[in-house]
Length: 170
View (cartoon, rainbow, N blue to C red):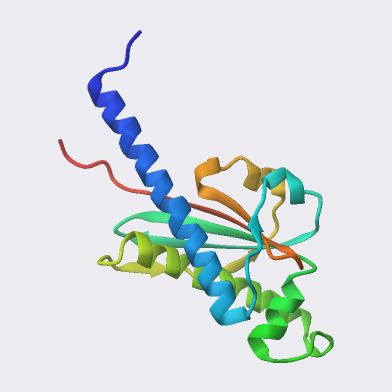
């Protein structure tokens, strides 16, 4: 059965939106890590390449012109480096609460940055970022267009971002 032109137009719009989200996510991760944590993304890697590492997970929801969620997984070896750069302290001086707090703050900064790039004229209410218990299997079920893994050489950051809107009236 051949799809209708309406189905094809809908699919084309979905693919354009996925590309926008992917680009916004990549730009946001690079900018936030560089400006706030003094770290540079070396490369984007395949999800499976880093799946075996231990990670700290955070998530946050948003509402407004669209609703959605950002989920973040930061490798356990990278999290103390992020906190050290953020607080300007040696890693040995950091508490577990400070490290977890920085992972949540990274989720907050990334979510705000992505939304600003995607919907610059819209208002959003951001939920408080929360540490979560999760596993990479859950995150790996996300649409690959909205899931990115960034290797910093000293650890990795995994992101899942999705948003949904009310269907527009015909």
